[in-house]
Amino acid sequence: MLSALRFVLPSVFAVTVAASAQAQGLAPPPPIDPSSPGAPNRPSGPVNEDGKSTTQQLDESEKKDSGRNFELFYLNGDVGLSYISLDSFSQTNLALQKTNSLGPAFSVGAGLRLLILSAGVRMKLNQLSAFSLWQLNAEVAFHFTESKFDPYIGLHGGYSFVGALSGSSVDPGNAGATNPSSDVSVRGFNGGMDLGFDYYLSSIFSIGVNAEGEALFLKRPPVPIPAGTPQDVADKIKSQPLYANSGSSAGFGAAGFLRIGLHLGL
Image (tube, rainbow, N blue to C red; front, side, top):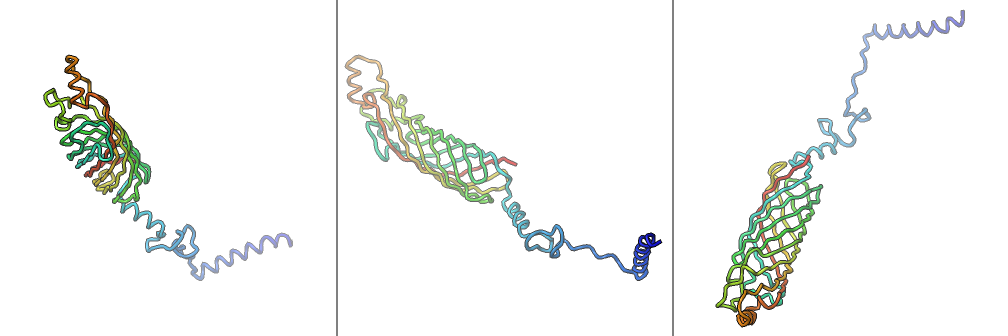
């Protein structure tokens, strides 16, 4: 009997309390405000009226302000003005009369970008009045931000060669002979620094400016001697240093460009 009462009495008490509470019209507790202190799943740190933490607000604002995706590839083109001096630092038997010139320049570059670091290759043509200088370079740049305004500083280096020389660039010591300018070859290496910025019009298009300076280390092989009698050959070698010796020089180049870019990524 006593053991049965141990099970029955608690059940009767629970039913009685529940019925009493229902009779008095007690309502269930209100839902917990997720933004209230101690609430489960509440964002850490201060929250705004939308229930977002400061960290969430900053992340959303940064993405909205930059207007950019996660960039992986870039392709850009430049048009501008360049000045080249083939022998501004030194020269040995270069035998060119006009070694500095100013004129338009064009370049195309492509490469990879990962956050604030980019690396790629670039082809540039300096189409100057006295000569044309082609350059094939590798480039690397450090970018200071990932916002719409994207300043950078970089380095480049590679191979340079003169594509064509004007007649006035060649030493006219052999005035009565055929001008050998088409046979003159000047080639070597370059290395320099870039400074500029891009402004992102959208997540994939940008415009910008770029300035660069570089050192040039060039060589000129001897020009092939035209056929002729031994006396003619001797006269050519004597009057035109291009036929007698090779030459070398250390020069300088500077350029400024307007740039348009295409940026692809995630």
